[in-house]
Image (tube, rainbow, N blue to C red; front, side):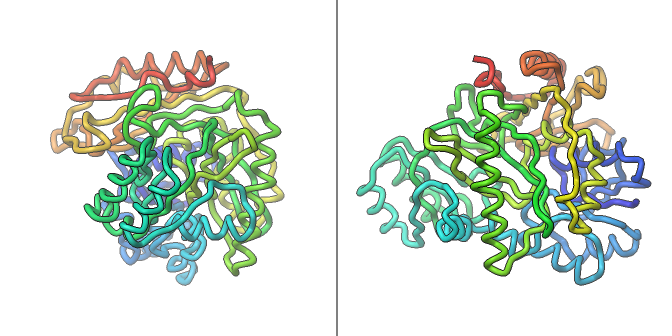
Length: 423
C-alpha cells in the first residue's frame, strides 16, 4: 500500500516509524514531515491545513490510505472531503472532531449522557466569567474553548490568578479566536492518565494507558505545554480503573455521539483524572495524543496498518491487539523558553552518535534539515527521546542516557518523567 501521513511532529514521526514496519507498505509519503523522517518516508512540502493540495496529491500519487496526525485538518473537515472524493482516510469527520474542537460541545455531550467529568460553566463574557470565579473561588481551571496547541488550559491556584487568566484569554486574546469562549471547571485532584482507542461503527479497541507530564518544569511546576514526556504502563492505576474508564467513559461517549447522529471513526483520546470517586474526563481529543503516541505505539506488536485497514472497513471490534509487556518512557527535549518565546535554527548534535535500535528511538518533532544538511531546531518541542525496557526504571534510565548524548543551544527537558510510578 502507498500511504500518506499528514503532519510534522513527534506523533507523525512515530506513526511513520511504526507503519514502515508493516510488510503491507510499499511507500510512505508525509506532508510536510520534519528533519528526522527522511529515512522512513518521502517528505512532501504541503501544508497540513491545505486540504485541496493534499487531496490533489493523494489522487495523483495513487495513495491507498491517508492517516491524519494533527487536529486542525480534522476540525477543518479533511475527512469529509477525502471521503467525498472516494479516498480512504483515517480520522473522524468534521462533526465528530468537534469533541476536540469545542470544549463546550464536549462538556455538553458529557453532561447529557452522564459521562463523569468536572463540573463546569461556559462564558462568552469576560466580566461574567470573573464574577463567577469570585463566587466559587480557587483552585480552578480555565480553558479556552477552541484549539490552542495543547496550551489553552490554565490551572489557577488563587482567584487573582484565575481573573488574570480570563483577562489573558478573553481580553488580551493570547490564544486568538480559541478564547472567544471559556470553560471554567472545578479543579480535580488525582493521577492523570491518557487512554486512547481505535474506533469505528463496529465498536472500540482500547490501547494501553500512558501518563503525560504537561507542566514545563520538574514537579509539575510552571505553565502547561503540549506535553514534556510520557510513560507506559502506569502501574499505580489499577486495571479495574482502566476498565471502568472504558465502560463508563469511552463506550458511552461513542454511543452518545451516535445518538446525536454522529458516527465516530478514528482515534478517540480521553485525558483522564483518576479521582477518589473514579476516573473523570479532563478533555477529549479526536486523534493520537502527542507525546503519548511515542510510548504507546512502540508497545503495539500488532501491525498498525492492519488495524487501520480494519477501521476503514468497520471491523475494529473483531481485532485482537497484541501488546509488548515492556515499559516505554519518552522524554521531550524543548527549545529554551518554550512554551513562551523561543528561537529556532539551533544546530542539534549527537543524533548520529546516539545508539538507536528497536529498544531506543529518537522521534523528531520540531526539527528541519538546514541548507547545509544539518538538523536544526524548528519548534518548541524538538525531540521525543524514547526507550523500551523490562520495567519503567530501566526504560527511564535508557531514555535519559540517550538524552544526555544530544545537544543544542538552550535545550530543556524535565528530569522527573515517570517518577510518579517509581515512588
